[in-house]
Length: 114
Image (cartoon, rainbow, N blue to C red; front, side, top):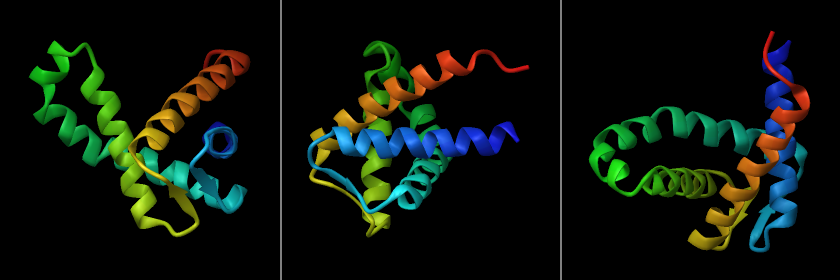
């Protein structure tokens, strides 16, 4: 049950982030859920491999490369979906920041896992 709630909250965070960030459009809440799940899947598969390959550079830049990889995964999902669009790298970067902040707020309100 918690997994489903987390998916719905992740979609809500993505939907709110898309409304707040200029240059990012999502057709609806359902598209936001799908986009958020696809970004999470891309981050956990392709992003994981890229983070392993770029570990030394990531270590030297104090995690900046991980953020760039996350932005690239958002752009990848943008290319895969027609109902989710970004205008470029900076819009996707701002979306990643807003999305992370909203998810952190949701996590703080929800509390720890049981």
